[in-house]
Every structure is written in C-alpha cells, then in structure tokens.
Image 1 (spheres, rainbow, N blue to C red):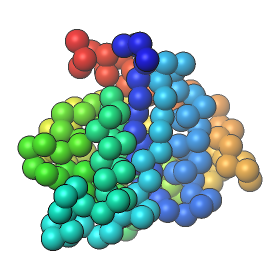
Image 2: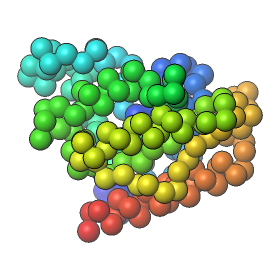
Image 3: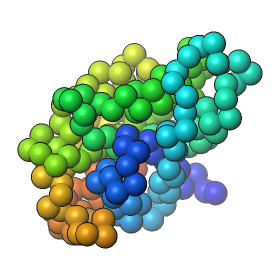
Length: 187
C-alpha cells in the first residue's frame, strides 16, 4: 500500500440493523476519496468496560477492535443521538480503545465525526459531547466541515441509500477534508 493510501477505522454508534447511522456509514464508504478505505470496527460484541477484564489484551472482541483501530491511519465516528448524548455502546467502545493509558490504540489518531438523527438536531448534541473526549484522549479532530444530518429519515430511501444530494455532497466534502487533514498530520 502506498503512503497515499489511507485506512480509516469507523465506529458506528448504533447497533440497529436498519440504523440511519449504519446507512450513513454505507454512504461514506461510497463517497470516500479513491485512496481512502473505510473499515467497520464493530462495537456490538464488546463487553461492558471493566478493567478487571483487560488482562493480556482483554477479550477477543476487544483485541480485534483495538487492532483494527491501531493499524488504521485515522478514526471516523458516526453517532446517533440518544437522550441528548452519545449512545452508551459508543462510549463503551471508546473506553476500551482508550486503554492502556498512554499506549492506547487511539492515541494521537486523526478523528472526524458525523451523525444522523430523525429530528432537527441531527446528532448535534451527541457530536458536541463526543468532541469533549478528544482532547483528553489526544485525538486530533477535524473540526470542519461538520456532517449533521437532520430529519435523516427523509434523506434515505427504503433501501438505506442516501438520496439527498446536499447531504451526499457534505459527506464527500468532509471526507475530502479529512483526507487532507490526515496527510497534514502525517507530514
């Protein structure tokens, strides 16, 4: 793989099979720059974070996600908004990925965030909350452009395809900016 190739591990913060955030992930895969590969880093099988379980790298599901994130060039978080916040399952994954302290899989990674929700906030509050973790975890956030998909149910068809052209353009624009950000941090 050439140094221009970029691998991005993606955490999708919803476990529902027909989640609009899973659909947003699929759209991002489709709209990513040609040299960017987005890979799902599944969070659904992770046990609840418990330091007592983190022996010899932790359970297999923890080892697998840590390896996926550690070997990636960057991290993309796609989050819904639950009760004006991030889903517990996503916070749990971040807790696992932040250990061991000072040597974690996410330490120093470039990160971008996007999300979708059925209402007018479009995951805005969840994204704001998740961004508060980035400084503590020494993640290098792409701040703009933001992808906040409001009234998301109207922007995908019944098969989960993102049909709203404005949103498609925004996702592609963010991923192109993320590519530049990753290269900038590499240099």
